[in-house]
Length: 178
Image (cartoon, rainbow, N blue to C red; front, side):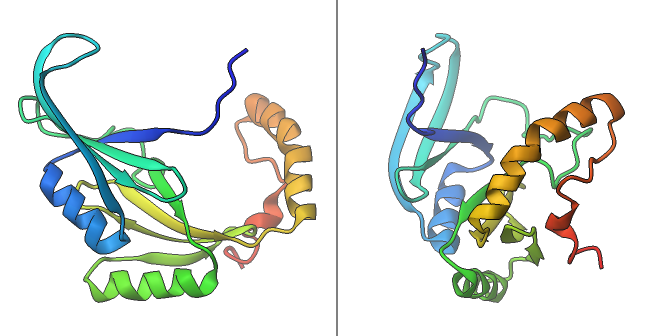
């Protein structure tokens, strides 16, 4: 049986490896860990030069990017709204989230939020490659998490039939929609 320990890294494409590394260092204080570059793809042996960079996202989590100069320009799935695909990073508490929002805005980055998700609070913004990022802190109670876990199978079962939002956990965003 497979026994996953954690996510080693998540990899995305970037337009410019140097710009991306510097942006994550300057704006999210991530340490630049490793750069790997080859003229061929090791897994496929395809002749496709790349730069692969790795950044420390905290507690053993690694965020990686590929710059692919010989591939067509980076695009997005035109059928997926830009708010769907995102990378979420956790901060310790509300004070840290508010300080991060202030710091990002002072650097000229447009920030959405603070959004109350009932069990977490988040802000949203974009990196220079157009990837949506989220900073969040948790404030869920054990009871809330237990209830969400309990109703999750019922919600997915109902959704699979109706394709309408089940109301089992509507309390999560009640303040956002008041």
